[in-house]
Each structure stands twice: as C-alpha cells, then as structure tokens.
Image 1 (cartoon, rainbow, N blue to C red):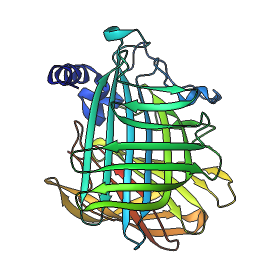
Image 2 (image 1 turned 90 degrees about the vertical axis):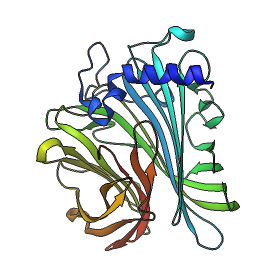
Image 3 (image 1 turned 90 degrees about the horizontal axis):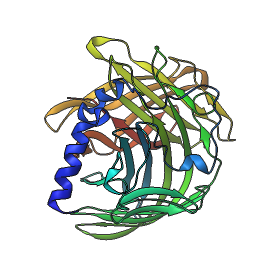
Length: 350
C-alpha cells in the first residue's frame, strides 16, 4: 500500500462510526444496516464469509504456543471488516473497509503490526470455497469448513507461518449463535472454533523457532454490538488442562455502570452450555502500567456452577497493540482450581 492509499484508508476509517469513535463507537446507531435477530440459524459454509449488510465483522485467531525448550509464546491474526454503508460494490465504489492486526508475544517482548485496505480492489477480503481471508500478503486459508487452516503474517520485527487442525466441532456462542451483549438487547452473531492443534514457526529478531500449541478462532458480526453506555470489554478464552474450555466476557459500563457479563462453558466431552447472565465473574487483582495507563493484567475468574476459581495472569503485561485503535491482547496462564492457558483482550482503556 502506498502513502496515498494509506491516507485514503485512514480518512475512510475516520468516516466510519464503528471506528471513528473507537470502541465506544460500536454503540452508535446502525441506521440502514442489518441487525442480528434471535432464532436465526447460522448457515455454513456461507457464514464463514463476509456479511456486507452488517456494519462490523471479524475473523480472529489466537494461539498459545511453545518451543522445544518449553518457552511460551502467543500469536494473534485478525481481519476486521467495517462498512460505510450496507452492501458491496466493485472497485473504489465499495463501502467496505478492511483492517488487519497481527501480534506475537513472548514473556520478554511483544510485537504488533497493522494493515489497512479498501474493499472492492482485491487487496483484502474473504472467500468461502475454498476458505481464504487475506489482506496484502497476510493470509488465513484452508478448508471450507475451517477444519484446517494455514496462516501467515509479518511485521517489521517478526513473522509467523502456522497450520491449524481442528480437533472438535464449531461452537455456537450464546443462544445457537445469537450472543446478547447488553441488558438493552444489543447482540451479535458469534461462533468459535476453540479446538485447533497448531504447529509451525515464528521468526523473531533472535531467529526462527519451531512451535506447537493450541489455537482458538472467533467469528463475529453485528451492526451495534454495544449499548450507548458501554465503553469496552474484557474478553477471556481459557483452555484448561482438564480439556474443558471457557469463554467469558465483561462489557464495561461507562461512569461506573455495572458491566454486562456472559459466556460459554465447553466441557471436555464437547457439551456446550451458555452461561446465565452474571454467572461468569472476573475481578481485577493487579494493575500494571502499560502504554502510559493502568491496566488489569491479573484477574480472579470464577464460575461457581463448574467449580472454577482461578487466577488468570498475563504472560507479558506489556502486550499492547500499537494499532490505529489501540488495545491490550496477549496470552495468559491459568492457576487455581483449574490450570491451563488462554488469551485475554481488553479494549476501551483510555
């Protein structure tokens, strides 16, 4: 992308309410865009592809990885789509904006990179047969049912090439894929593939290292996923050594308003249980200074019905994504009633 194209994309991003107001902008009105409706069945492989009538969408893969010496790493590969208007068009008439984020984290360093693109010109997009999501030379591609994926991305100081093989079925979050995000009823369509086995290589300033591990893909689309009084979220995807998994989130209210909490329990045998509102509890324990602000990088997470009482702690407290709309994203370790690893995302901390 040349300088002129970067400036155009930044201007377009500023014109999009979903991006211009940061994470709080996701609570703005979505006039003219499609709105998620309860009881709407998700359809595959169609829903692995883009939904241009909705305002915001993402394809989001994170992975906890280890090298042969037991050193821990984490990676993130994300493609965002945001629309200036519903629908699609050819060439520069397309109202779709694309943004890619990549991250690589170790206990000692964190690297991030970003790509920006305009839809309609082939620079970024998603196809479903076979599946491919791309922006510039970053790719996540593979089987049309997402059972196998290859992904690659690079920044100025890092790159990675990894393969992912699913060891279980897709998980529909919320009520069969309809995920409520506020007491007022804002919602998204949301499903995950939380059971990837990963292998491949990471390239860092110190050299290239072979890694294996486990990955988690989140797919979500909506037009107004937050309410007007929500300012950001704390999002956990936790994988326990028992084989059980937990996705939970707190959507923080502005001005001290109680956050909205929800999530999903995925048993080791594959039984998926949506959590009742408020059942998932996550309370900050320790703060760290990150990018000039105080962020919670150690949490107490509880889920009484499943006997979960754990401490979730960042592998690297400085996992700050230096992107157009900055946020914290990094691997975590889990200790307590259950042990394991996972990923934490925290947005809206100004």
